[in-house]
Each structure stands twice: as C-alpha cells, then as structure tokens.
Image (cartoon, rainbow, N blue to C red):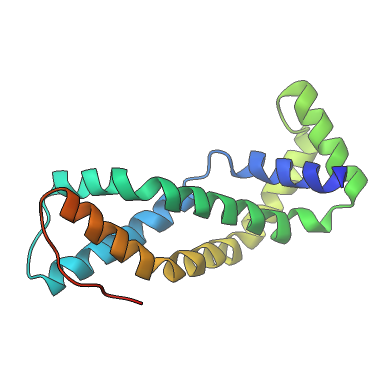
Length: 153
C-alpha cells in the first residue's frame, strides 16, 4: 500500500510542471468554441473567450492532470519494483530532487512513451467534448450571449 502511494507521488512529481494537459485542453476548448460559433453564426471576442476559458478550464485541467499522472504511473513507473519506487520517493523527499541516475532513466522512459501518454490524454479530452460544449455554452450565456439549445445528451 505504501509503495502504491509512493508510486502515485512520484508520478505526480514527474507531471508537476507538464504543459501537456493545458495544451491538450486548449485545443479541445478551441474546437468546442468554434463548434458553438459555427452553429450560432457568431464570433466570440478574444476577451469573451478568455473569460469563458477562465470559467470552464479549471475542472477539466484538474481531470487531465490526474489522467496524465495515471498514464505516467502506468506507462513508466509500473515497470519499477515497489522497493525502488519507495527509494526514489524517499530520496526526493530528502533532497528535493530525483537522484541523477533515476532522473535520467525516467526521462528516457518518458521520451520513449511520450506519444502513447499524449494519445491517452487526447482520447480522454475528446471524451469530454460533449460536456465541455455545454459548459462553454452556459458560461457564454452567463456573459450575456444567449446560445439556445443543447448539443449532446
């Protein structure tokens, strides 16, 4: 049990500064916004889009960060034995950094699996589109631009 917690913590540390969830969701957000603009024959101003982004993105970004952490755990860390993960985590706790030889090995594994990890995240983001479109529609309406209808069930 402790090793699983350490495995999760190491995965979170590895993903901490990743821009991947933000980049993936920004793309999905842009597509969803364009869909609404096309359906309603309108164009949202950049400032409206930014306010809606601020309103809608936190939930989705948190979900995608968690999915990224899960993917890193599965694709990279699950190949490490429990005792080694615990050792890596403990060393990080004491020094604030991963031991160099582990960091290099982890980076190599990440580079080798990056496309698989990104694709898993994209697939997760794509599955969010229906709810995202609805949240964007509601956020735009709260900003004073009424967009009737529901797009997905």
